[in-house]
Image (tube, rainbow, N blue to C red; front, side):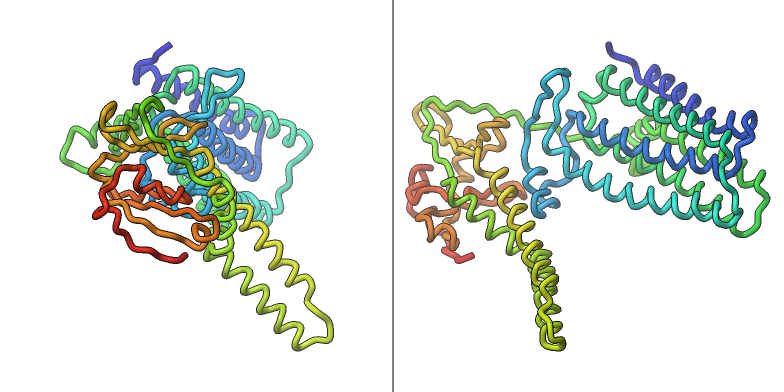
Length: 416
């Protein structure tokens, strides 16, 4: 069932009005204190963030961030993959490339959520010395339940209405972070007013007004985006939604090369241990351990053990990173007789990932890393359209298999 934008907006307004009515009823009818009101809003912030993460998880639009910007360990492996993993029961699927944006939003949102709670709720409670009575605790608990149910209804409407099929994962995440910023500001400023000695009725009215205003702005965000698109006034709200490139590939009539699995795993170990953060932590713990051993009678076993644990964790992350990127990959080179000579990177679990034209393949460079020398393989690399394509740990004749000329095959041999 498809809803028009106006119907979606009306439904969202109804849900948000119901959610905002809960603390208002609590203040007017149940005699909630300011601490109780802020506690309910604080829980709603967390529910809003979790709901946005669920929405982004099932969003089917192409992520709007540049995958090269997530070249970090593990994050880069996830962001560069296209394809979905279907759920066994529900008619929904998880797009792998959505995960980095979700993890980043959860990390940032969690820090903000903890800060808002510590200052907005904890600070007010400590300043006023107010505590929740038994009756107030029960009513606040019901209010929290109503807020969580309201957010769950919003997520269900998003999925059942099919909205997830046409939006990138950043859209619900940005909406949630904007809403959190509005409500969080109300918590922080309201808490500051209380600490400064402002009268509670004024603070209550301020918090309620700012919270409602933030929700209204979020509801009519699409109208602002539409205005941004059709006018010369750039508000920075118009979404730029890219589309996935259609890639067709067949094994028939194609030469296929695959990376050597053992080399991929060993390359992952090297990748993990060479991570700048890994080097910094391991070297730091080891240095402190050596200094501690030199200045005391005992050996700093804990510090050396910590360095080994850090090295082990980054080794596991490196192996996952390289395995997820390359273990299931095969590179299909269409023959000149049956195809157009294009090279397609195909993930046997997630489907086609990218393709390179015959002209692009002519610019490939050969490189032999330390791992390549150990396993008798080579790595091919080419930069095309602002993206670097890396085909690691292939047989030594892979360059010739891909049909490159001898002149184009000349590449720099480097050790890594």
